[in-house]
Amino acid sequence: MNKHIITVVNQKGGVGKTTSTINVAAYLAANNQKVLIIDLDPQGNATSGLGSLKGSSTIYDVLIGGSKIDNVIAESNIKNLDMISADSSLSAFETESVGLSEREYILKNQLENLSYDYILIDCPPSLGVLTINALTAADQVLIPVQAEYYAMEGLSQLLHTIQAVQERTNSELTILGLFLTMYDKRTSLSQQVKKEIENYFGELVFKTQIPRNIRLAEAPSHGKTIFEYDSWSKGAKMYKSLGKEILGRTNS
Image (cartoon, rainbow, N blue to C red; front, side, top):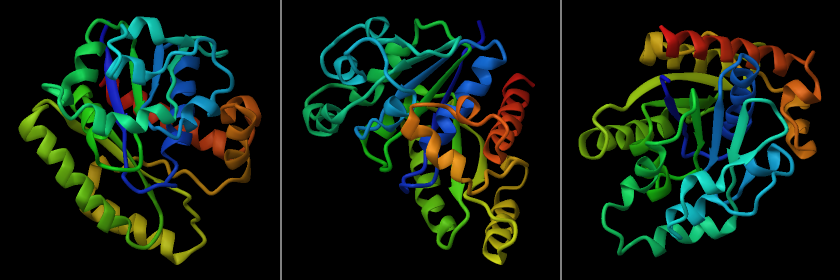
């Protein structure tokens, strides 16, 4: 099985990371891919966004407690989609892992024996040791970028981190692509950010933009993906389009 491990990352909060992780994963699962989401954010938004999951163990038990990763995987109510959940205990990982040797590789070592087509890792909004673990474990990085002022500023810091990881812990890491979120084509700001990102990143920018969409914002509070909550919404349509692009890029 050709396994794709994709880390979804942007150290800015509120850019649609978790929404994108869940909905891209759901799209891939609907297309007969076996998918695992790993929630690596102590806020646990991906965990609650997928509704109630059986099993109480979290990724913290794997990173610190020495649990086998197979033992913390829970099935979601979506066919082909599994989940490893997170909760606030994960916020202690930064300090508790200080004495551990090769702490950047803990997640990578655990993922080696898992058989999934896609593993999507939802990162916290910071560039600390959890994100470094995710980048060290991944083959590719997927970057959601909010269409707002200072979008490029935050990106330069992220690119610096990705480069450091490539040099130190994961020379195989590549950028799968960037896509715009909360995009409103009627505003000149959205258009401007799009142009700037495309000028700088060229072919790496996905053609799909994710719009501001009330149904997208509502879905997680119901523990549902956008496809379950409102499959005819603009948000669902655009995540289908993005999912299709991701399938195309990862299988080419």
